[in-house]
Image 1 (spheres, rainbow, N blue to C red):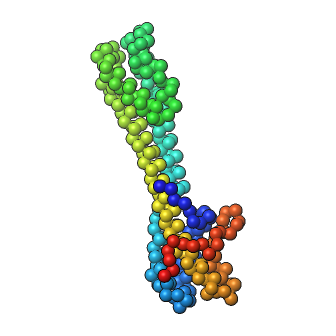
Image 2: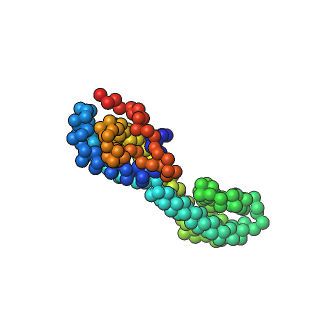
Image 3: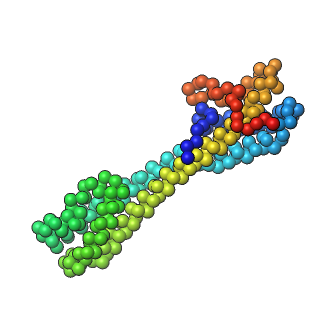
Length: 235
């Protein structure tokens, strides 16, 4: 879901301005209600409710940190898988001396590629445990215990869990961003009505009128004009 923004400043700047605007409109509510029946008291309450909703949606920075930790967990798990496999290689070479076709069944020729990503290592370990069980009798007779097979499965499962957590974080981050943009766009549209009306109500009061303007962007340029046509009719 792609949600375009109707405002150009940062979320933090916009939310700060929204909080200020809500308080100001509540103080000046009588001016708006007397100006037009459109400005019923519940309209600003709707904006206030949307403001609370937007504040309860975790910011993108939160998900960036969570995703960074999830990626670190995957990298740590990949490294653990690599170290354990290196130890296993010694036993495989000992049990099957000079049998490179069997070594390759165990992934000797795929190992370096597997270290490049969590997904690659997961697929590698999925094959590794399959081949290990295929040669289980020979391996347990000369080198491995049941604990070795258990360890291979545990490392594969742990890597999968970390990968799933990273995927969930990416999905949650995208969903939260969409929800936040939709919510803030709704706030923008509703407040734009007040900003537009304020131009008339405070036409001769520059001091008051300056509070009813959309915030300045991070580049210092003023936001879109309050003449912006919103989707909600004034009637």
